Image (cartoon, rainbow, N blue to C red; front, side, top):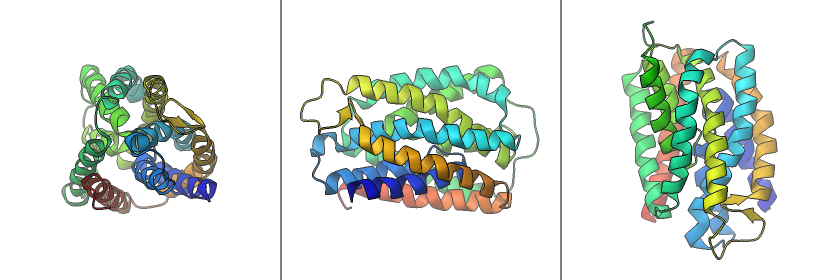
Length: 267
């Protein structure tokens, strides 16, 4: 049943990744925390193991999602180039910071962040931003660094931060989703490498792990998410932009609430 749960989590995360331009971590992290806890993994490593495994799977999911969005010409590669180095730097630093933070605190912080972002997307962004000049490359680099930092700490592809930033910058919702999917790749690669490295010296780790990455979970989730990300990307080009934003907001509301309550020990 452990493998079945991994596959179910991967399928839903992949669908969300393609549909909303996120890496799927907002789905994978809380689900993996629940799975690892249910299977009696050492509680002191559960959250970090969920984050590291999530980042590793996001590398695969993002690749599938960005290829699908690229076919629809919805990836702004010039914006991606301006943000990519910052995303990598922030992700590596974030992995080191996460290694020093208590797991329950991590869950609560990202839960609050997701809830705030959900409220913004649901109530403060009812229309696409008007077309306007992009912010300077330095600001895009800085935003990439901050997004990479937060994303690596919490095991997400950064879509919950990247999509609103890109939409604010003047990109349409579909371009924001497509470009965000591409931004998830450098975040995931750098973040997963960091978690694999910083988790090497941790004692009491379950079998079948490389640092803070659960190998079997990574494989099962990646296979399912890779396939479903393409389905989600196709749906993203069919649904109206306003519907896409509302669905995105609801997703963040549910995931953020679950993470916050879990961090408090309620769930």
